[in-house]
Figure (cartoon, rainbow, N blue to C red):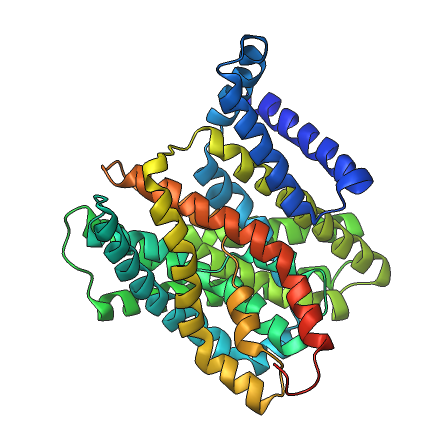
Length: 417
């Protein structure tokens, strides 16, 4: 089966599930795709022992096994999803909340990595599981960044103040580049290398982040200058498409952060380009195109995330660690956001700001993609299953309940939360 056939099958599934969700389920698209994917994965595993279903579900397992999930996310989808997500951000609000975003995307990731890593290591020792401290820190690094796809999907349902949206959006969009650097450093440590020096990590993060930011802004500016010289919606849409993939790939070629470059390019196009450099007709086409890209790739990504359960290793002896990791991650998130939660609660009159920042910090497909990039080692299977359990909880439980939390806080009397 060719890659074209494989893509065709999964896109047909996305369309059918989307229709079913619109007609019957009425769930957020990402949650519906993930739940259907999980159901398919569970049926595939159960079907191994049912002769009438073994062939059908065995075929589904082979299809999923052909998908390189990590490469699909990091190599193909992430550029478009980050660019589309950045176009939705209010840049003026992001500038006002830049200190919160910067600190959460850098110091927040580092602090969470340590808290989760040491915590998971301690619980694993209590449960008698063979998880070394370096590998526990690898898990802490890959699970600490909030996922831009999951967070933006949760925020689509509204009800959150502009300042809180800007913080959650900005953090999710910018912490990916930081997390990848920390993750790679921890993997090297786990594979027998020297313990990573904080100053070396800081220097690497600064070079990659600032380089990616500068490259993305420069590429975005060039494209905007090109769009202002024409009025042709097809050409201008293609320019934004080239910008999204070109900034991501170009930044990687220059050894700076591709994710941050794509975010920077999307921010400048969404803020200035759409409003000042495009006609009304072009604006509608550009915004509509990237809205569809965002929705379709989101749906495909969450479907693949659910189906990925077919090929991941699971051992029920690890269930205790799965259960412990979820509250541990939430406590680490609370510790990281607590200062900013208190600031927004008392200085900006934001009800339950700490709770919003904690529960709204969703984990998603990026964490699993990073886990799948971990090299072969005895602890790799445990890391994969642990990551998957946390991600599924985050997307389904936190993702579904987050709008209800916002609605409840908005109804609460002032000063009650």
